[in-house]
Length: 88
Image (tube, rainbow, N blue to C red; front, side, top):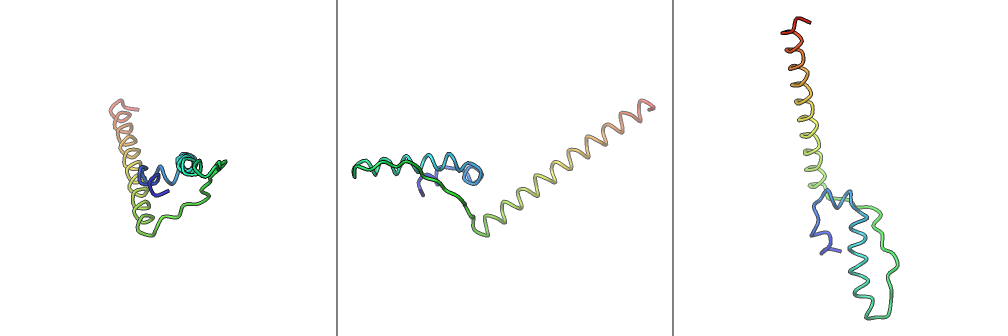
Protein backbone atom coordinates (compact mmCIF):
# COMPACT_ATOMS: atom_id res chain seq x y z
CA UNK A 1 0.00 0.00 0.00
CA UNK A 2 2.84 2.40 0.81
CA UNK A 3 4.41 1.86 -2.60
CA UNK A 4 1.13 2.62 -4.37
CA UNK A 5 0.48 5.73 -2.28
CA UNK A 6 4.07 6.90 -2.73
CA UNK A 7 3.60 7.04 -6.50
CA UNK A 8 0.57 9.34 -6.32
CA UNK A 9 -0.01 13.03 -5.61
CA UNK A 10 -2.03 13.88 -2.51
CA UNK A 11 -5.05 15.03 -4.53
CA UNK A 12 -4.95 11.78 -6.49
CA UNK A 13 -4.89 9.79 -3.27
CA UNK A 14 -7.84 11.61 -1.75
CA UNK A 15 -9.95 11.77 -4.91
CA UNK A 16 -8.77 8.71 -6.82
CA UNK A 17 -9.52 5.84 -4.48
CA UNK A 18 -10.57 3.60 -7.38
CA UNK A 19 -7.12 3.87 -8.95
CA UNK A 20 -5.46 3.32 -5.59
CA UNK A 21 -7.68 0.29 -4.91
CA UNK A 22 -6.72 -1.15 -8.29
CA UNK A 23 -2.99 -0.65 -7.72
CA UNK A 24 -3.11 -2.28 -4.29
CA UNK A 25 -5.32 -5.14 -5.49
CA UNK A 26 -2.79 -5.86 -8.25
CA UNK A 27 0.10 -5.93 -5.79
CA UNK A 28 -1.83 -8.19 -3.43
CA UNK A 29 -2.77 -10.49 -6.29
CA UNK A 30 0.86 -10.87 -7.33
CA UNK A 31 1.79 -11.92 -3.79
CA UNK A 32 -1.27 -14.17 -3.39
CA UNK A 33 -0.64 -16.23 -6.55
CA UNK A 34 2.28 -18.03 -4.89
CA UNK A 35 -0.12 -19.18 -2.16
CA UNK A 36 -2.77 -20.35 -4.63
CA UNK A 37 -5.12 -17.55 -3.68
CA UNK A 38 -6.94 -14.98 -5.75
CA UNK A 39 -7.73 -11.45 -4.61
CA UNK A 40 -11.24 -10.63 -5.77
CA UNK A 41 -11.59 -7.16 -4.31
CA UNK A 42 -9.76 -4.52 -2.32
CA UNK A 43 -11.40 -1.32 -1.17
CA UNK A 44 -10.16 1.67 0.77
CA UNK A 45 -13.19 3.25 2.37
CA UNK A 46 -11.64 6.30 3.99
CA UNK A 47 -8.37 8.18 3.90
CA UNK A 48 -7.68 10.54 6.78
CA UNK A 49 -4.68 12.82 6.26
CA UNK A 50 -2.86 14.12 9.32
CA UNK A 51 -3.47 17.63 10.66
CA UNK A 52 -0.47 19.18 8.87
CA UNK A 53 -1.63 17.89 5.50
CA UNK A 54 -5.23 18.97 6.15
CA UNK A 55 -3.99 22.43 7.08
CA UNK A 56 -1.95 22.66 3.87
CA UNK A 57 -4.94 21.52 1.82
CA UNK A 58 -7.16 24.12 3.48
CA UNK A 59 -4.62 26.85 2.72
CA UNK A 60 -4.39 25.73 -0.90
CA UNK A 61 -8.18 25.73 -1.29
CA UNK A 62 -8.42 29.21 0.29
CA UNK A 63 -5.72 30.50 -2.06
CA UNK A 64 -7.56 29.07 -5.08
CA UNK A 65 -10.82 30.70 -3.96
CA UNK A 66 -9.04 34.04 -3.48
CA UNK A 67 -7.49 33.74 -6.92
CA UNK A 68 -10.89 33.05 -8.53
CA UNK A 69 -12.34 36.02 -6.66
CA UNK A 70 -9.58 38.31 -7.96
CA UNK A 71 -10.06 37.09 -11.52
CA UNK A 72 -13.83 37.62 -11.37
CA UNK A 73 -13.40 41.05 -9.81
CA UNK A 74 -10.86 42.05 -12.51
CA UNK A 75 -13.17 40.82 -15.26
CA UNK A 76 -16.03 42.82 -13.76
CA UNK A 77 -13.88 45.96 -13.51
CA UNK A 78 -12.78 45.49 -17.11
CA UNK A 79 -16.35 45.07 -18.31
CA UNK A 80 -17.46 48.15 -16.33
CA UNK A 81 -14.61 50.19 -17.91
CA UNK A 82 -15.62 48.97 -21.37
CA UNK A 83 -19.25 49.93 -20.83
CA UNK A 84 -18.26 53.31 -19.40
CA UNK A 85 -16.03 54.05 -22.38
CA UNK A 86 -18.86 53.12 -24.74
CA UNK A 87 -21.15 55.48 -22.88
CA UNK A 88 -23.57 52.77 -21.84
